[in-house]
Image (cartoon, rainbow, N blue to C red; front, side, top):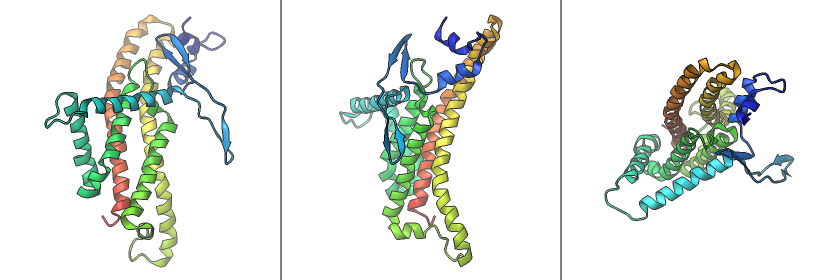
Length: 278
């Protein structure tokens, strides 16, 4: 019996589609590579300020390493020699960076600040896109389908927003911008808490949106494939596999859209902090 079949069945040998799906979308301390189970290093967790922290290497951590390594090596190989007109894949990467600069960064932050923030936003876009697309390759997993990963990316946006807002307007000017001009004094005690609460809801929405969209498509794909095992009939295979392939192709589009949305909203939040008057 294969691992997939074993997971899809309960101890009473009855199909359990829920366990099958969870097994394939959750993070793991081992990497199933062409039938070989590679056990990843595990470390003893430690406590910091009463919080248990586990720095063990998981499958999604390895996926992020692969994505980072791929981007670093690719850019180094393609742009180690400066050429006036990039060709091939280098031209595609340059067009992506120019798109982020001209269509995302500059419109939300202005020419000067937009160019300054383009490296961060381009890195964010390409990293998220690479992680999203890697999840569509059978040997890999979707790191952005992990709430810890998307939350970490959102935390980067959160701190960048606060830091750049204070750098651009000064600490006092930045926090004063949360109070609209001419607002009656009694409303200050209502508006200010809402604005402060909004500082945290924005990155929370970023993390949840990316996580939910990336895990939803994979859940549907595994549910369709799992129907073959759950129903126990080969007659359902053509329909299940056909719909799974269609959803998988749709996931390619979703991978680009979600990378764009995360980068666009991050740029928008940073721009609003740097230019609160706009």
